[in-house]
Length: 258
Image (cartoon, rainbow, N blue to C red):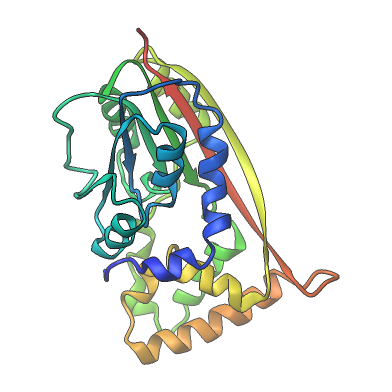
């Protein structure tokens, strides 16, 4: 898969940053010394952490060179590292591990989440937000178009790229079994989009990447025409001509025992 596109991602920066703002508001730590932003992207969430905790040592971690380039421009005072979350491990504990819209791409949450919790110092917090939107029209229609005869052969295993995340109750059980106090909730956002084409633009830099990465430039254009036509029907214009993109997200803040 090609590198993430930071400019495309930041086109909807305010909407994409809002979940980080709301998650951080539920973190009760007053003065963490070491903070980790997992999947920091272009640094929009890292900037929130730096503002909230100006005295903290902050590390942003991401696998995308383009995202990290933008993050370093944005926050030259922070440290950013290119690494794979699945295999990386810290040398010493963090007081806050923050992961906004990244862990849905990784498998094995039953072992991954306790492992992330183990990275915390006593009394530290693990704050996680993940999209829970695979059943929404935005994502169901990707799979429907991919199943059409024209592209079917290229997408035989597409369902394995991102699998549905487990139920909230399972995350609660996994984390509380490790002695953590768990605050968990779900919010459905309704992002106001100018058109069905704007919804396509939103998803090009996230959910559509596994699909577009398997197609030639010509095939991508044809695929997106079909996909936008399906979106236009699934997300009809409201009274002002705009579209509402439903976007459910799961949040959790797990605090390790002292």
